[in-house]
Image (cartoon, rainbow, N blue to C red; front, side, top):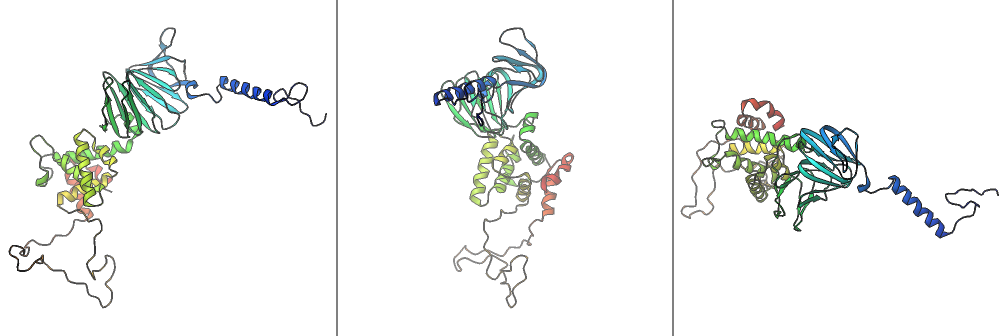
Length: 389
């Protein structure tokens, strides 16, 4: 019998190979055993573990409420509530649901969370997705990122760094992009979200720290522009009574920093004005238009100086020397006229007198930095170096 291996896993007790039917039955039985043991189980079957517990309580399906503890496993259908200064985190395979103060949630299974009241941060940067229900509102299809959901008289969904789907029991559906928010009242759902209004809280600082930091710096610039006597604002940006110079000037600066030509600059500035007017934070507006605080700060200085925006692709004059290069031997640069030439000689009203204003040099990087320093309140001057450079 050399070479024969007897095993009750793949052979019968006589050492003979089983038929196909018996082998299939054995494999099926093995899969059932693996599922029951938790191997290869679905997300719904995964255990929900509590961490970061402070002033939190577990309300089991049956039995009395008891204090929650780190590492505790929830039973299916258990609820968790936090006190006025409490918090707790529900973890499933790396995905986290962080509870804020005065919050209560249910955990029917590992793939579902029911928000009864309060606020939660769904952190899906790692781990599987989930379905969160809050009354008549359902939040699901969360991409790799984080979303804040709050429930009181209405349900507010803030897509901090993830795309998310919001649905209501009436059948309305909204795909909410990152850095947008929406409020669902009952079964009513707006057709579109609005640009995120930042709170600068711990959740935002942990998920989108760069956006929060940029928003603070842009708010500092706005405060300098709106402080009486801090800077001379061009007439085009002098606000109406009750308005702020920063609303228009910062929007145009963001448009100038974001656009590569006049058309794109105008479109970006229009978006910045509209988003800001709808309550969006400056840092969020700049992030959506893919520009930086340093570029916006330089654009603000240019607007205050009256420096025109650069053209998209300037065409050099014939025989003009290229910057950084010496003129070619034997070729003299063509002198430029000192006044505007008449476009149509002899036509009345079409010629222009020579300008008597002395020529001005474009501002250097140092003057731009000084200008931005001028518009920032004195206590905030230490931020300038990181703001500009």
